[in-house]
Amino acid sequence: MDIRERILASELPTPCYVIDEQKLIENGRILKGVQDRTGCRILLAQKAFSNYDLYPAIAPFLAGTEASGLFEARLGAEKMPEGECHVFCAAYRESEFTELLKYADHIVFNSPSQLKRFGERARAAGKSVGLRINPERSTQDGHGIYDPCSAGSRLGTTLSQWEEHMTEELITLLDGLHFHTLCEQDSDALEVTLDAVEERFGQYLHRMKWLNMGGGHHITRKDYDIPRLERLITRMQDTYGVQVYLEPGEAVALDAGYLMTEVLDTLKNGDTDIAILDMSAACHTPDVIEMPYRPPLYRSGEAGEKQYTWRLGGPTCLAGDIVGDYSFDERLSDGDRLLFGDMAIYSTCKNNTFNGMPLPDIWQACADGSFKLLARFGYEDFRYRLGS
Ligand SMILES: *Cc1c(COP(=O)(O)O)cnc(C)c1O
Image (tube, rainbow, N blue to C red):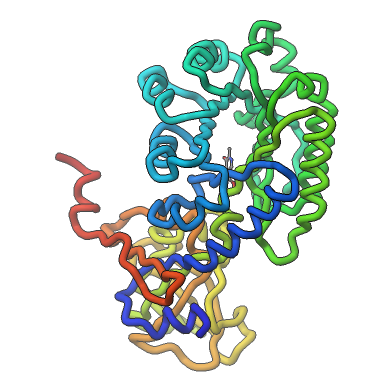
């Protein structure tokens, strides 16, 4: 049975996230293939997906984890201990750095000044040291907040910053370079980026042991051009003698999660049919509002495509707490269950309890067909973040 039918037919209480173990494994096989054919190493970027109960299912296909700071580094080290632990942070703080050294294998700095401040200590602790560069070649339009190459970006060292601050002593501290410039993109954008990386930093790459090409590679998407990705990896490894790393988040857990919700009420404003759901866009799928984007909804169409169009919104007080307009073959009514897709990434790790909204359960749809409860939340999870 289709996983979506299985979830809808289940008795799981709503709202709930369901993570599809089988799909994670399928994504993992694709990523493993790229590594086997090229010798590159692929890490899970935990900021997109960090439901660690599933780490044992994906660990066989990955070389380790990537972290955005101390807590994610610790999670990666504890929950995928057999893998490498890489960390990049825009700025490390003194009070955390010693502990970070316990978990991280690779430490990537954002600026020459951070490298100068912490690089020696990382090196002395036996860590592999890297610097994030900014190739200053935008390849995305639309999502400005996801473009680290936009004008005035704080992410990564530009060539002019490098030339001004990177002394020979600092360069010799480096084992590798890192860039992260893509978001949900194909390997054509990577190719454009690599041309810019080589043009600006090629002479330094010859002195490095590794090159980390960040995330944003939509490798597990159906139409992604994997052969071109592999050619690019091989080109960089052959030209510079570096070990290539990729650290996708989305691609690891793409289409591997759902959010099931129930219609609590239906109403009408003018010509607009509205359904109030027991999930909130603002709280449970924040990227819907922040990115913004329209998540897929099983058995629905675009507004106006099927006979009945409904505006779907949450129970909070926020006027903009709207998932979007979707159409259906039949009218919605109280108690109907709806299933949103694309909910494994940037959802469970990004939700919040604004408006006193309860957090949805997290369930695992196990590869053997059963469902397993991973996390359940209550009033305490709302209260404890607000005071003593
Ligand atoms: C966000 C991020 C990633 C993962 O990006 P995806 O778009 O989820 O693949 C990888 N590396 C760094 C440094 C990031 O900030």
